Image 1 (cartoon, rainbow, N blue to C red):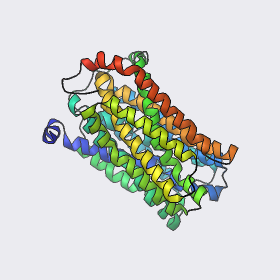
Image 2 (cartoon, rainbow, N blue to C red):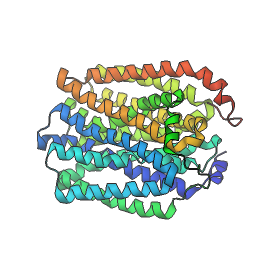
Image 3 (tube, rainbow, N blue to C red):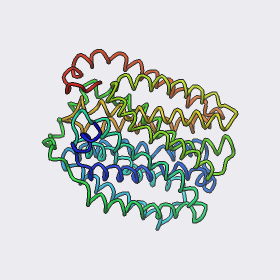
Length: 403
């Protein structure tokens, strides 16, 4: 029951995890909605635009591994506090010193990677307060913080138009600082913290083939979500000649759809099982991406397809993290980092490949089509492991919890 869920955990921590995740994701994809403005000012090629918006996802992917280690050794709250201070300091430095070159945008992208690494903090911070029967809901609510990408798409182009895009870096520090204070007051580490393990113990997780499957599955669902969130403003401006502000509105609508559906994906996985939910996600996502790759002439049809695929991928994000804590509850910190790494790599690939496809062929067709193929590969992989999962570790979880 819903009331059982709220009584079973620590509500202030869940809210703090959501807020931290929300503003962190807001700045993580900040370069995406600003990309049309930056590219025009710095005269960037399509490949440079793709790389610029992809670097924060790759940096975030790598730093999620670091955060996964720190979460298990010093706790999620301290790890999150360190990351927030680095992001605030880095953005303020960029604002004060100014960013006037392509190399400078890449450096800012690395700083923003620390915000993307919040994934490996916020989810275990919330997850460790809840039992297996509530993992989908808890992870879904905390993970809904990826809705912060909506705010970036909505407000970054408007602020850049009014004050210049460099000023947006400094303005972003205001909500970051407010949430940092709330986080320090509200967040609390669960008393059910695993004992710190020697570093070599983390390598053993990678010997488990299930860890690699989860990295692939999330590389498609979250990678698709964040890759599109970073690239849609560029796509709408280049293909339909929209202004950056209007393109930001369209991007915000798509990102909102994916963020809104994430907790429902986790709840659906709690009800019918994560495997069934993910199977449907991969089928629908692959079909929609193929349709997008055909480059519909209508702006309305294109927007509808992007809304559908973002909502589908958002549901998949929730479903993956209904399964991960059941399989790796004692290693949830490092697994959150590893799975998040897979998601970040997927996002880096999609965003950069769209730019390369545009530069090499004059169209983004192949970028979307290849990612649709990755979704089908994930579906084949899920089909190959589902029987083993259900008859091994799936049979040992708490009665009534479905995988």
